[in-house]
Length: 152
Image 1 (cartoon, rainbow, N blue to C red):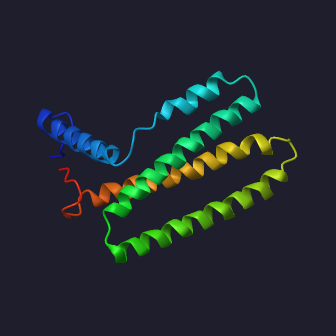
Image 2: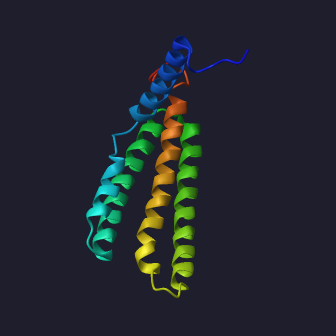
């Protein structure tokens, strides 16, 4: 017989596991209001206002990335820090390379929307890095190291 999620006990277990996962992901960094960018863009009256919204979101994401990076570094030993710093350097190189490619391809657009699309594309790159770092923090929270918080 197949297990059904409508059984109260199983549903409670699934929900508590999901809640624990979400809480542990959020524990490593300051909360970011995911709707703030959407709300700002919805209220924007022109392309310049949308760009301002994207730039504000990018600043918040850069701050969050810095905070998550510092939290990760605090949980690593010297050898592991070298690996993380190499990863951070590689990500910066990726960001530079991807931005250069965006500039190249957006400049080729015949509809003239390239400049207005650039900030959103860059925001997506920062969002991806933020998610990566949150995942690393989540993994470190289960590492068993004395400095890491245990969430089970």
